[in-house]
Image (cartoon, rainbow, N blue to C red):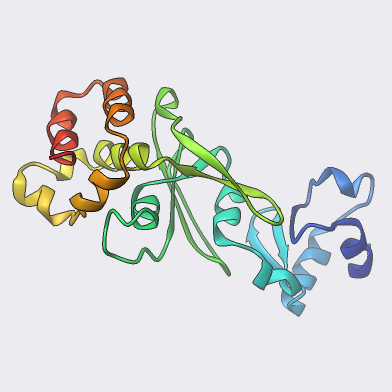
Length: 199
């Protein structure tokens, strides 16, 4: 296959080498490697690529959803999004029911933290021009963070070190929903710090 043919077949800015649109067209490893080397394609991870010409159109959040499914953006990434922590976050941090993974490509660093499948909920779909991604609801982002960092939060000093903006949290959190979600985790130690977020 020629590169021009590929751009005619695949209209989206990123694709999988097993994309159904390719039909019976053969994409060979050496071709993909050559196009990456020439700067035509950006390798996202094994078997997944983006067109370099479309790089400016693509959101990192979309890539986070595309390269490791199912997953939703949460933890520090969502906390910063909602203004719950003051820091800028330099990685796309997601939650998944699959194993922990880390990928780095031209769009940034993508971290995936495992959560039990029965806790894989509490997110909303965000549409983009070319695709979509999933983002934790504010209540779930906060609870995911406490749940996955519980071993590091042993006392008030540890809790303070997270630097949560409690005023913004109280303003944006639906407390009834937060308490309902909290009960699903069913961890007493976690309740102590979760309730501190509402004070």
